Structure formats: C-alpha cells, structure tokens
Length: 110
Image 1 (cartoon, rainbow, N blue to C red):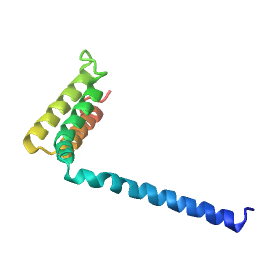
Image 2 (image 1 turned 90 degrees about the vertical axis):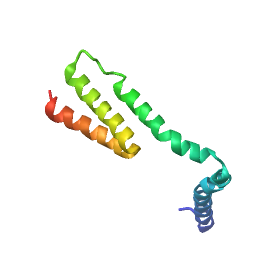
Image 3 (image 1 turned 45 degrees about the vertical axis):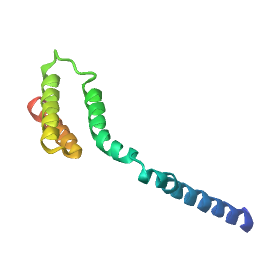
Image 4 (image 1 turned 90 degrees about the horizontal axis):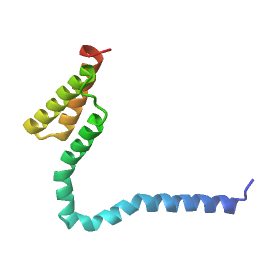
C-alpha cells in the first residue's frame, strides 16, 4: 500500500491536470471573442456540415436500386427544402434523417 504522501501527491496532480484542462478552453477562446472568426464559423458551418452529411450519405448510393435511391432522394429533397424554408440546420438535418428512416423502414422495407 502506498504511503500517504504518495497518495496526496497523486490526488494533487490529478486535481491540477483536471483544473488545467477545464480552464484551457476558456483561456484560449478569450481572445477569439472579439474576432470576426466565430461569427463567420457560425454562419458557414451549418451549411458545411449539411454538405458533408449529404456526401457521406450518398457516396455509396446505387441509382439502379430504387429501394435505396428513392428514399435517399426524397429525404435529400426534403432536407434542402426544409433548410431553404426555415434556415434551421437542426430542423433540416433531423427532419431529413427522420424521413429517410421512416421511408426505409416502412414504404421501401425489404
């Protein structure tokens, strides 16, 4: 069994590392608050994320298999329409995902 000094040193080290890791993001982000970068990222990232998700979803799509191509195309069209209508990335992504899952598990189920 380790002695008391060793255990106290281990706990103190763990506390210091934990505190440092939790404080580090605030220290790093403080200078960015006055920068135009966060505003730009807030405007550009939702569309970028949606494009990445669309490409990832459609990369293995075989247009010759209607049971897989039709639900994906309908969900993609719904996602684009919902985003153009409401400009809400969360609503668009969740709505398109829900429609795709619903179509694949009911209408186009194997």
